[in-house]
Image (tube, rainbow, N blue to C red; front, side, top):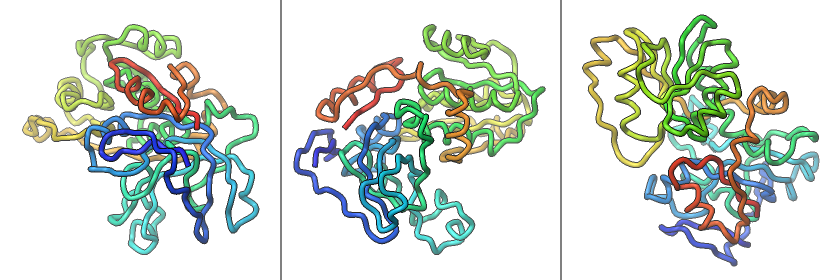
Length: 314
């Protein structure tokens, strides 16, 4: 099958082995996939990943030992746990120490004609939801996890650092709680999008202190900036993943008693519901669409400064 492979650099392969669905799994024809910052970091050597990247997708089940899934349009969670450890038994495979992650670690992803996933990872896509919206289910779920882990009150002030793909989703997810959300970034066109959605925007850090700060810049500098604008005893939500290590003045965390919250994957069912209700808007985030044969060009485009969502259609 046709696939975009990291080996270690990106290349298009025409005869990549088509995956085989095992018991309790589905073979999925990928209809649309999205490129996120993690994919770009994998290209730079993050996780030393070899194989097919891509974890944001919508597709159709073509094979399964459960006939009820065949023909269904689906999206899917990316974590495949061992099923035996305590986090897995508690229903949190994202924290399984043996987990594999679709297109990131130990499991081929969605930048290919087909991928396989356990049926337990799948969610059915509403019939009236276009592929261009459904493909945002995974990043929207990840954005919602920020609100899941921090109990926000409507009277609180929240800052989202970063006006990129992730930051604009996180800002919308946090605004659903009723909190006052400000997006801080450097790209006027993207800040205008946020303003059109009813969010406050700034191009600098001078807006005072915030109760909660979500760091979505994708840059090590973002953590330091977050500490600059969070109030004492406030909360910093860390969303960025990148290759390498961040330098930070942890003394400020101690002295100001700042709460640090790491946030990664999140709930799919609410994500699909909010996308269907257009309470989280994503169509405006799509910047370009490429065929899979143009996959390397799609990655190059996605890596340019200021670019929003790039989609790949196998």
